Every structure is written in structure tokens, then in C-alpha cells.
Length: 380
Image 1 (cartoon, rainbow, N blue to C red):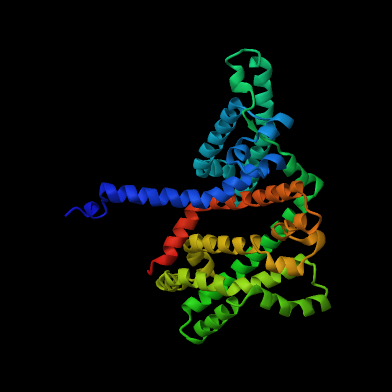
Image 2 (cartoon, rainbow, N blue to C red):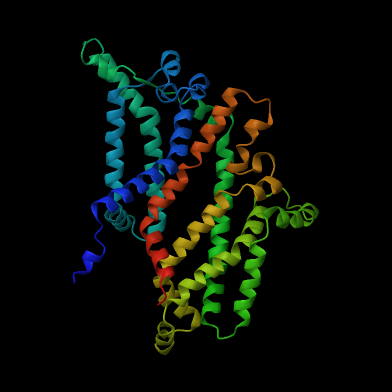
């Protein structure tokens, strides 16, 4: 019997499967789509009861302007170029790595992605409006072509400008970068060594210590942070980003070690033994033989650590204040003052802004993420 026949669905079941998948995708993506849509509209359109008014923003179009069909086509064209560059990223990375010579590949990759992000922002906020205006000047007087260059959807970037420039949201972004980089770096450094030792030890004590640590991880954040407040205030760590890094590492470390331990368990101990026979010491065997095999698992675990630090609200809210806060708790500042509809739309724009780095991270590490999850789920 053909094995593929076992996985072939009947037409009704296939239709039902697609309906469930599409329904789930719509339900999952709708909040983000609506958040981004509202962030580019004036409050008069953003909070209108009519969904079509929120989407097309007639008041925003009349008062400020919007995007035309030509602008949409230009944006889609640049989006297509970015997508093709992303699909060919490995060859592009190899070319620039060879061009820069001795610079490590990951630094070249980070540099190229920063350039792409800056180019995407410039394209959306500057190039597309300029091209649309140019087409409007050239073809605006022609009856049929004027329909293509006249705005059909109201869009404004003033809320993003208010958030990032007037309200200096970039300071919270820098704080978030510092905290997430510190958490991921320390967590992965400690966790890889600890997980490797636990995976290779024959003692059950390490396993039960890790179980106790996971119980500590299950406690509510408010309970844990309350215990840190007094010593942090006494030793001057309150309001310092390094203090938040310490707390988040302490909270996240048991889960990180446990996750990496499952990856190390799937690597045969014979690799260690072969490296020791060839003259490596224990650390050299770990670094030169085991870690190259472990990179998908390390990247997967690092992504989870990144999401923990990036999306943290409770710890940063309680231990940081003022300009030292990260992005997620900083959004609440728009609701702590006398809130207006403009403040609420700016809060929506800030919330939409912080989703972009997550998409970049997932797109950047998608292959390693899938490989790492598969590697950790299958017992070798």
C-alpha cells in the first residue's frame, strides 16, 4: 500500500480542514490588523463604529491625506523586493561575509538586517509618499489616470512621529534592547554549560534540583519581585536596567536549562567520547564538537528567552521607573495622564511598533526555530 495514500484526505475533510485553518488565521491575525489600521487614522476615524470608516478613514483622507492605488502598488513592489532578498538571504550573507573578511558572520547578518529595517522604514514613510506625489503631479490632470493617483484611503503617520520623536519612545526601545540582550546573553551562557553538565551527569540529584527550580519558576512574578524590592532599594539597584536583567535571568534560567537539557539528551555521548579520544579536553569537546550540533536548539531557546524579556511587564513595571522603563510598561504612560482619544491612538501606535522586532526575529530565525523544535521533540 502506498504510504502517501494514508495521508490523503477526502474532499469533504480537506474542505473542513481548510475552513478551520483559515478561520483560525483570521481570528489570530485580526487583532494585529485592526491595531495597525487604527494607528494610521485620526481618532475621529479610528474609534468610529463603522468598520469601513476605520479601514478607509474618510476624515483622515480629507484632513491630512492618504495613499493612492499607485502608492499601494509601489509599496507592494518594494515589499516584493524585500521578500526576494529575504529568500536569498543565505547567499547574500555569504557574499558580504566574504567581502568583509575576518568579521564574524553573525555581526554581518545583524548589520545587514539593521540596514534592511532602516530601508523599509524609509521606504514606507518617505519613498512611497514621494513617488505617489510625483505620479499625482504628472498624471493628476488626466481623467482616467487621476483615479489611480488620488488617495482612496486615509493614512497619517503623525501618531508614530509623536510616539517616537515627541514622546522619545526611542529611549524605551534602547532600554529594551539592553535588557533583552543582557537576559539572552547571560541565560544562554549559563544554561548551555549547566544543561550540558546535567545531561551528561549520572547523578539524579541534578535532575531533582532542576525540578525544584522549575517549581520556583511557576510562582507568580509579583511574589518573586516583591522579595527583590527591599535588597534592590538598599543596594541601589532599584531603577537600574541591570537589576531587571538579574531578576529576569533568575526567573527564566530553570526553563532555559530544562529546554537545553532536552536538546543535549538527543546528542549521543559517543561524540564527547570521540572528541576526548582525539585529544580534546572536556570544554573543547563541548565547544568544538557538541555546540555546532546544538545551534538550532540554542537559537530556539534564545528566542524564548528573548520573548520573555521583550514582553515582560510585571518585573520592569515594578523595578524600573521614568526613562529607564522598557517599551511594554512604557505604553501605560499614555493612560496615566488625562487620557484623550489622541493619547489612546498614540498608545495603539506604540503597541503596533513593538510588534515589528518580533516579526523580524521570527523571520530571521525561522529555519533554526523549526529545526530546533523538531530536534527537541524527537528522542535520539
